[in-house]
Length: 289
Image (tube, rainbow, N blue to C red):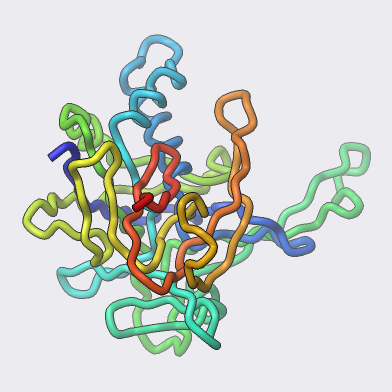
């Protein structure tokens, strides 16, 4: 096999902010950690560990990780007994976005209420040491603890579950030495700290989020009728029946603007199963038949 795959689980040690388009004065937060964000955090930590005495070579290390590792998105999860259960999104007819976990399900609005909190903030006017006019805002963050809507159950820690594919097993030792990373926005203010609590080899059960995987190609491939990453429309064609939502997805790559591309968001579904290839940016790309 060209690739090996491991499942890992992280626990939130601080509120987590993963930005998305705002709504008025509210900075909204995604409910998952994109692969690109995870790649940046792993690159930063690996570079610093390798260059403890010199300035880290982020560019070289990031390129090496991009060539030899692939990440799925991290989704919220809970621990029940000795097992981890992940919440996954799915767009459904007449219901919109619904989150599923084992036999439980919640509409997106209820799930966001159970998972998110908001933090107020404002800019300070230096001449008066008071709030600057028009800068009051709130920032949504994923809480480190689940909110029980009925307030009857003891709160449990919010976990993040996903998978990592390794082309070169030499990276396994490097990843295994990383127990804490900082992801998302405002990490300098204490946000985004997550701690790895689980690391499992799944060679005996080759599935990712319950879907079959193929590990002998140039990129790891997942066979699924639902995407749990941003999926480009490449090779999908115009006759593919689908439901979900699209957005422009992009960002920065070092000092250059990363080209934005229109993509289906996680949870979008398709009429028939497709084979999806995960590229180095974390995009899900439909394999041309």
